[in-house]
Structures are given as structure tokens and as C-alpha cells.
Amino acid sequence: MRDEQKMRPPLMLERLLTALLTERDLESVPGDLEEIYVERSSTSGIFAANWWYAMQAVSLAPRAAAQAYKRAPVLALLCCFTAASGSWLGTMDIVLKHHDLLRHEEIAAGIVGEALLILLALPLRRLTWLRWLALTGSLVIAKMGASALWGTLHSRDTEGYILLIAAALLAETVMAWWKLALAPTR
Image (cartoon, rainbow, N blue to C red; front, side, top):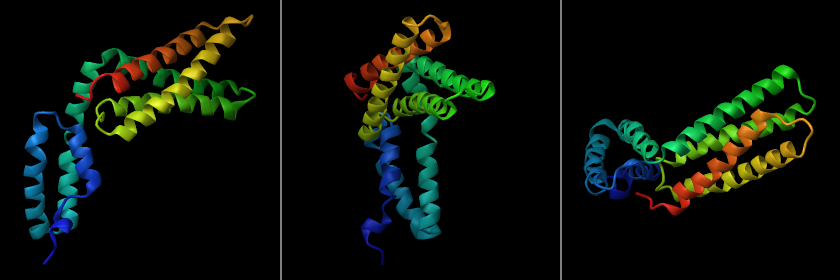
């Protein structure tokens, strides 16, 4: 006979589930799903039960994301804008064959990656490590934005798109800290 520990859903999936649930559902849903999981693992096997549990957890993601982006619409829009801007910068660097292509691509990838990380951290706020990873990355992006802003303002060739992206990166950092570090988790 299997011991009770083996009959529990994988810890990673349990944490994902609890991160995606609303405060109201947090009290009842995990217990109900665990009971069904134990039953399924007895009848269908552990792999099938894990797959079922994973699908239950993932099915909550769209609702959790919609609620999170509704609570922070400006930050969500800023992240979409900076992700699109980073993609555009990376593409234009390739098309125009800039001299320091690798460094430019790293910057563009960092901008896109950080925007996506913040968008992921918003609905998964209960995952403290993810929240702090996004916040730490936002400081790096803020430094990039401040450097770009300073360099553009003190250059002969002021490029408006760089000013706009730099300002958006700085605003994204401020909003991320406000929504992910200072606001309550739910």
C-alpha cells in the first residue's frame, strides 16, 4: 500500500494551484482537488492523476491573469508596450545590421524578458520568489532606461523612440514595485 505522502499531488503543482486561486477559493478547492487526485491515482495511476491535477491548475490561469491585469491595467499595458518595443528594437538591429549586434540583442531580449516576467508575476503574486525575481529584474531595466534617457538627452541626435521606450521602462519599474512589492498580495 502506498503511503499518504506518495498520494499527494506534486508540490510544484500544489503551489501553482494555490498561487492562482482567489482568496475565497483557497479554503476549499485544494482539499477537494486533492481528494479527487488520491482517487484518480488509485484508479488510473500516478501519471494520469498528475496530468489531471496539472490541467486543473493550468485551467485557472486565464481567470487569474484577467483578474490581475484588471487590478493593474496600466502596468499590464506598459509591459505589453515595452515587450513590443524590445521586439521591435531587436528586429531593427538585425535588419539594419548595427555594429554591436550582440549587445543590442541582449538589451532587447532583456527588455522583452522583463516585461513578460512582470506579466507572469502579476497573477502569480503568491509565489514570492517570482515576485522578487521580477522586481530585481525591473531594477536592471530601470538602469537601462535611465542610461538610455540620459544618453539621448545629452546627445546631438535625439531619437524620440528611445526617449519614449526609456520613459516606459522607468514607469514600468515604478509601477512594478508599487503593484508587486507594496500592494497586498490579494
